[in-house]
Image (cartoon, rainbow, N blue to C red; front, side):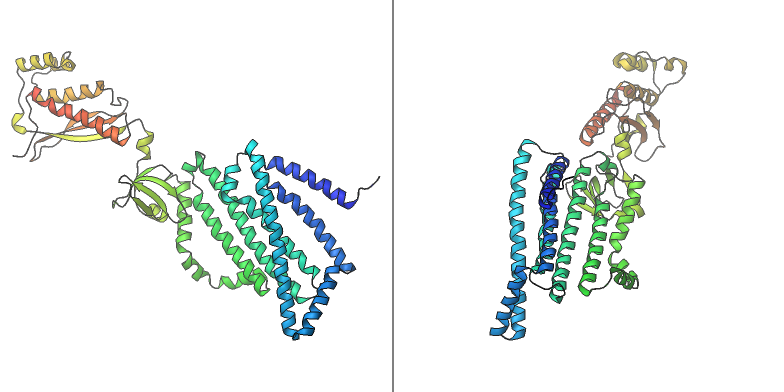
Length: 443
């Protein structure tokens, strides 16, 4: 079977990979994979050329010899190294600049006709630009082979610096991926029940910690395991430094697993520091917008260790409770006469078919008043009759005889609820004189 030349075979594989990735990720990121395959072939060619004797390597040797002849050997070596480093960085980032421009052009052309579901999140977090920043790192890793012998210590130093650069870029890419997922997850209904911002921030801390350990290990040319072993002795110091993050992460897990707080819940702290809607739950804070539009930041572990009130149960139930006492003047209590009962039945339609009163020998105006309140609430369109309706008499006080009225309104929004329950109590108080009762008022 006839074998295709290497360059044509690589080109075909690259083209197929580009088409496949462009279908999978319609935002131009597949350009990166197309370039990677070309760079792999390019690096292979460089290694072959270095083994045969690269022209650039010979030119570099002659240029180095010229510098050493006109200058001191140490300064000539330094100047040659500086020239090579500048040339490598300039070439690498020059190529990256061209690729970035090509990437933006492809995205602008392609996304005008078709925008993927993740397009907005990828653009917002600049994932494509971060991925393409790996290309200068790959180029910088290969170009020193064109200027130095393979055994030259300078190659090891340049490779070490390039590895650190690549680690930083990989951290940026992983960070962008996490935030792309978080942005998408924040648009779902599940985010209100189980917010993941605190978890993502915890993963960020872990990512930066691991990245820092690897970078330090590369700098000192030691294994990361050696550094981690040494850090075991300073675990107490690390726990003190990250105390708030650790407590916040554990508390966030407890809040999520026990369904204690969700985004959008109305919570109220007993000390009055917070009374409003939860807007954000992060690793270290729970953001609450109070009803006066001030912002309160609460540590998550405070919600776990301190009692607080969550009004979610009221918001999800069939009504919002109204519970007030109306104080009657004790001097206005009396036994109703037949004429008074007849007048009440005639003036108040709700009392017209009062059959319970016929079975009673003695009726007081307070009894009829309580009965009227019950019937009024049972027939009121804004009262949820499926929930408790209680009208009861409490122990008399120096302020009169309290009549407790307990019911639930159908409306739960704060402003509407206050207006509805105020209308109901306005009527209950203004109807009291029809029963010969007076509302107590301190003289």
